[in-house]
Amino acid sequence: MLTDIAIANTALVALLVALCLDRWFGEPATRWHPVVWMGGYLRWAGEAVAPERAPAGGLRYQLPALLGGAAAWLVGAAGVGLAAFAIQRVAIEFAAGAAGLLLGVALKPLLAWRMLREETAAVEHGLAQSLESARAQLGRLVSRDVAALSETQVRESAIESLAENLNDSVVAPVFWFVLLGLPGAAVYRFANTADAMWGYRGRRGGREWEWAGKWAARADDVLSWLPARITALLLGAVAGGLPWCALRREAGRTPSPNSGWPMAAMALALGVCLGKRGVYALNGGGRAPQRADAQRAQVLAARAVLALVVFSIPVLMKWPSL
Image 1 (cartoon, rainbow, N blue to C red):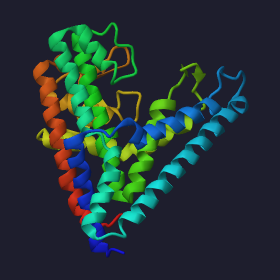
Image 2 (cartoon, one colour):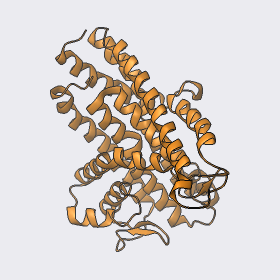
Image 3 (cartoon, rainbow, N blue to C red):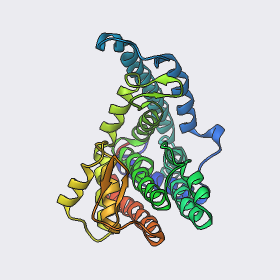
């Protein structure tokens, strides 16, 4: 069994190994990807808990869907957390170097920085070819209808996706890993996947999610609350500083309690307006984003990831989380 100091070193090695594997190899094959397995469970459970038609009547008629969704989420989260805990316990039985390597391999699929960077950059590459090509690429990133989006709107959406998913795919998993080890990162990734699949207010995929997905949506809100604000601060720091009052004001313009923070930070850092027509506009006085802004957004996001690692080092060394 490793000492506390060795555990702290192991956690740091694991984080660096995971990020290096992400940079060098990207995502593992679908059949070996734990997030895909999570999605398979959520798809199966969702068919059981989400009704095909919305029940008529008050809360008591909605209660079965609400409780079913909560129970299915808790079972899935418990399973993911226990599996991650077992992997972690096995890993730390090895020598520190080997433990860090094994833990890093297990942590890597819970991070998706390379994929995020490449997918969002591909939208801008698509714009250089045709608007239709860019729309098709953007459709892989967002759930909204992209068919009628203009060039400016496509670019806005890509930059927003980069900022929002910087939290979901990198900062938040690392935050929970630093705090609670591999189980923390795994449960967060499950929660974020559940929100993406279940967290809708109306009908999707032939089922009603208003109540069946409510627990998943709220759980993701809670687990993402602090990481989203950390993401905004990291973006602000690497951009040379952002006024806190302006950041808080702009972040509050979005319906989500969390996604507005990294998106607002990116909008202010670039000096552009980002938004969804008829829903919100961040940094409304800013100019329309240009190609150079999309490239600058990639640079800022990469620097934010580097800053995240730098700030994680003293925390890992002082507060063993395994």
